[in-house]
Length: 142
Image 1: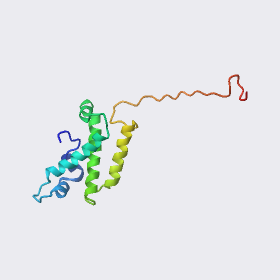
Image 2: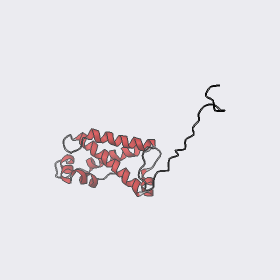
Image 3: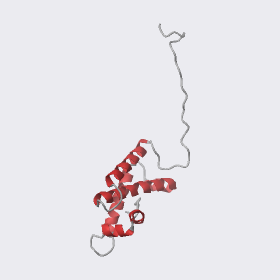
Image 4: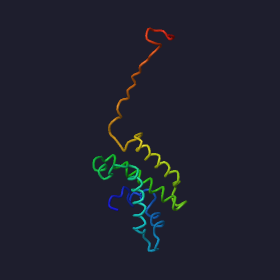
């Protein structure tokens, strides 16, 4: 897929090129199989894209480098989690915990409780309080 949010290079940076070669060399030719790596990258990218309904990640990433970095981080976490689930003990990650954390972060973005990266501070909260004591005329009892 042309618009993968995570790449083989990023996966190798986290778990090492030797580990990637060992896990994804299914035909025993000494190199990681490109279709296998592409599959994990596609699945992780799809997971992040699917969590952002109505948003095109290509448009988001072109508009803001911070968003691009955050989308790539989430997709990388999803890819590493899936690798750890597929190949238990092959990475230092608990795949199920990492996937659950990624799911929680994506849900927070969907709910508007987190954003995809911003250089500005959040809007100032309105802490105005209106206190009402009693009924009009100052008495609690009619």
